Length: 514
Image (cartoon, rainbow, N blue to C red; front, top):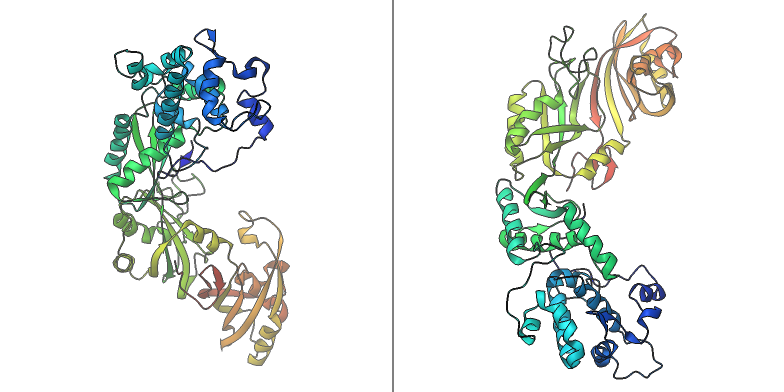
């Protein structure tokens, strides 16, 4: 399928990929059987007729001059009309890359008119050209004193007729009425017969300046849709793509995702960020998961999902977070940046303040969201690729008593690079390798006999629990090794996560500006 801009004229100022010599060969110039501008039309030689047709272009040439610039168009057009009745659009489309400011229908009509006048000028020798034109050109029939209507185009089978284009547009408009959208794009699924006809025309007609039929269909139907709706085409990121299914004669919609940016705070421990299928059954349901198919019955994703689906009248959502906290950790501070991808939304104009309030009401005490705003797919990638600092507050348990000054000194020594081999607790789902992360700050907030609260500011991707415990020597340095005793995290809270603002990673900004 080719997606084309559904308005504007056909491409005309793109250079051919072939050299002038190759172009000449494709157009029949320089071939022995066509020397002296001779073509076989209607079963007899008619070089005189073709010469008469070329004369308007050759007024300033000599016998030894190069072929007139319009002769290749004439030769190609004569070959094409000999193949059978062809509509103005299909003929004009074979020269779509020439000139600008014309529709293909206007190109085709102009070429037919010129051929008819040139044939008339050639007298009896031009009769065969008029006969080739007559099935699809009324002025030629009038000149030949023939009656009847235009025959159906053998290439498009009448598809490019205004009435048929109007029916395709009407089918698309009928589907589009069911959804809210701001921009659109038209694409076409060609039927087998139409594709075959187009291939035959290109092979036998020999034009090197054609555009695909589906490109013209997309453009012309798109112009009709734009005129009726006032909506604009978007080649890069349309809200909806209209697919013209020519085999079935109807339009189908591809409703593209809506993206919502925000920040969330996780206020309760014991559930993950996203839906987590049961490891035993893969989500099918089993005794271990109580036939729910899930390891946990709630997630941040699911707690905010339903209000979004209802507001956008969507089918589903996909949650994209900038990292994730542990299941037993809280996400506090200004929250963690996220993007929700809303699948097949029938409504796109959302009241984000009202949506925020509804999510916070329905997830009260568990999850809280803020800064909701419209986003795009690019932000999903930015969030996943961003490397920003994070701050953690951790209650740690020590194997024995430690003096406050000793603990402060050891924490200060931790500032700097840390080598972490993939922790044992996540080795089943993460590659086993050594990662280097940086500790930017480590402070003691409170100390008791065998426990303390500390704050760590570090690079994204550092495992704080293992920084404290050492993970059996897999993390170096570690708090446990520096103290010479076992240590472990009892309670962990994420208190700050850097954000993305205007495409730049920052620790202090908590807004994404569209």
